[in-house]
Length: 164
Image (cartoon, rainbow, N blue to C red; front, top):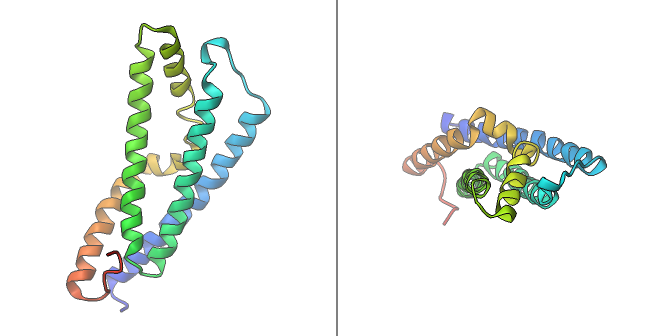
């Protein structure tokens, strides 16, 4: 069972855990700093709600990433399925927030414009937990590599498909 594919699967498990454990303190530190000294001009009145929503989602993302990493380390292919769900959700979340902020900011309605500005304003600090993943392109790299590994492991009969 100690093939290169199993070692590579476990390596991605370690990377998941490292990215998750690195993102968690970043998100928590930004949360601490934001809560201690918030700057809320009138034109960003929705900023606190946007920030706390982004941070909560980031904490969920990094927690699931660590759990998926543990599954991958154990060579449980459910970790691949969980990673697929997680990274697809992270990518969709980022695309949705960026697009939403852009379109709302261009709105002629003042309330929607302020909401868009607020979402856009917290895009960096609100996504501190997954920031390292995004900077390195890890979600896309891991999606491709893990699915190729899963296919290879199942074809070789090295592991049973516990992912259903």
